[in-house]
Length: 252
View 1 (tube, rainbow, N blue to C red):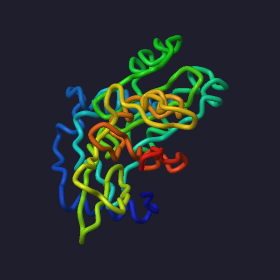
View 2: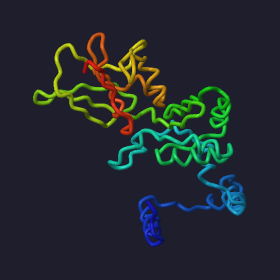
View 3: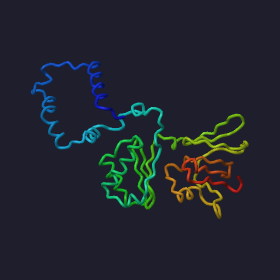
View 4: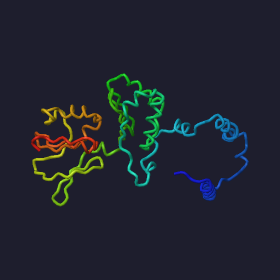
């Protein structure tokens, strides 16, 4: 939120009244280091173009803040963003960081530290990049788009099966899907090792299908699946990305 000059003035006046500054000789006495910094050093740094934002984040860890500190009204956070591989290849390393930092800002996440960015670039020649912090996963397969994934998002929550007035629903990733009929033999699960399903011209491993569709590896094991004990019936890919079609087995 940006304030007009008169609003800033009123805010400053209000703060001054609520939290008065008790002036004494110590506030101007140059024998105190804090006063020498304020009167001699800071003006020089400002005149040299010091960036207060960068300076602040050089001395503070993002993990110090809680979710309550970051709450933005009722606005839902952005759970993930997909960044084009074409743009990645066009940009220099320095401009890539600016590009990624600008998208992290949209997700209410802090910019990457220099050492974090160096760690990411050190994986650039690998078949994939995977970097994690306490709040974020950066994932990119060579030649494919880059994903920024919030670790506290609903993407990383187990799908829920809900019942309401005789109807059944799957809830995951802020999405809900109704299942017209559900017998006791049907269950909701996620991708397991060795799972196979009828896809196009034959049966394929589900993990391979998800890889071909560029679904990030960290997300694959959370996508909801309707199944019986030994058969996959529906894989709800559209609950992750609306541009993808759900996979329906020939038995569903």
